[in-house]
Length: 59
Length: 429
Image (tube, rainbow over all chains, first blue to last red):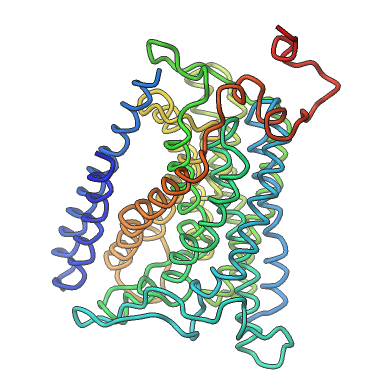
C-alpha cells in the first residue's frame, strides 16, 4: 500500500508536468494542475492511512 | 550584489538553528534533553560536511555547470554539475563570480543545517543518534541539494518563465527549499519511528506528554526570529537581488508574521482551553516565521500580518489533527509548523506577492507547480531514502531505551544528574 501511495504521489507530479508541457491556456493548465494535486492528495491520504493502521496494529 | 549585507545576514542564520535546538529540547522530555542537543550538533555537523563535499556540487548556482536534457520542447535543468569538494569555488576574492558562489555556498551550508534539525523535533525521545546522522547525510547530499538547485540554482523551477511562459517559481527566504523539505523529512521520520511508548492508550486516545522546559522553548523563539531574519534577507539578496531597502522590509515582515502567528495561536488556544497554551503559541510564532519566509521581501506589512495569522491558526489546529486523527506522534509539531505553514507561505506569495511582471494567475500557477514538486517528487524521494536507511540502522530505540530515556540509553548520563526525575526507572528491581 505504501508503494502504491508513493506511486500515486509521483503520478500526480507527472500530471502537473504534463499540464506545463502539453497545454498553454492558463485555465486549462490550472485544471490539470488541480487534477495532479488531487492525485497527490489521494497518495498522501493512502500513505497516512497505511501508517495509521500500522500504529493501531502495534498497540 | 551587496556583499557586506549578504555576509552580515548569512552570519545571523545560526541563531535560527540555536533557537530551533532550544525549542526541540524544551518540547521533549527531560530524560532526552542532552540527547536532543547533541543530536542537533551532530545533524548540523554531518549535513554541513556532506553538503560541502558532495551536495553543493548538485545544488550548484546560477551560471555554473548543470545536468540537463531537452524534452517536450523544454530545457529541463534538473541537477547541478559543479565539481565535488568545492573545487571550482575560489575563496581568494579574485573574481566576482567566485565571491558570489562562495556566498551562496556559505548560506546553503547554514540552510541545510537548519533543514537537518527540523526532523529531530518529530523524532524526539525515540530517534537514535546513528540514524539521525545518516538521515542528515541523506538530506545534505541528496534531498536538499536537488530542490535547492531547482529553485535557487537556476534549475527547471527557476526557468518556468523561459520554458513554459509562466512566471518562475519563487521562494525568497527558503519556505520551500528549507522548511518544507525539512518538514516532509520530519513526517517521514515520525512515520518510520512510530509513536512514543505510552503516547496512545489501548482505545487509541493520545496521552499528553508535555515539554519539560517551556522557558527555553520561548527563548528559542526570540533567537529564531534573529536567525530567520538573516536567512530571509540573505536569500533575498543573493537569489532575488534585493537591496538594503528591501532587507528592511524583510526584517519588518519577519517580526510581523511571527507576531501574528503567535497571537493567532494564543487566541485559538485561549478560546479552546480557556488559557493560552505556551508550547502551541511558540509553534504559532515559528509557523508565522516559516510562512513569511517565502514572500519576505515581496509583501506589504499588512499582508505579512494576514499570512502570519493564517499560519498560526493552521499550525495550532493541524497539530491536533495529526496527533488525534492521523496518529502521527510529532512532539514538536514540525510537520504542521514547517511543512504545512511553508506550503501556505508559498501559496500566499502567489496570492499576495508584489511582482514587477507576470499575471497573478501565472504566479499562483507557478507556486502550485513548485508545491506539487515538493509533495509529488520530494516526499517519495525523502521517504524512500529514510526507509532504506531504517533497514541499515533502525530509527526507533528499543523498549529499554524508551524506559530509560535517550540520555541514559545513548549517552550514558542524563542532562540533569542532580535531579532524580523518574526514580522508578533507576531503582534496581
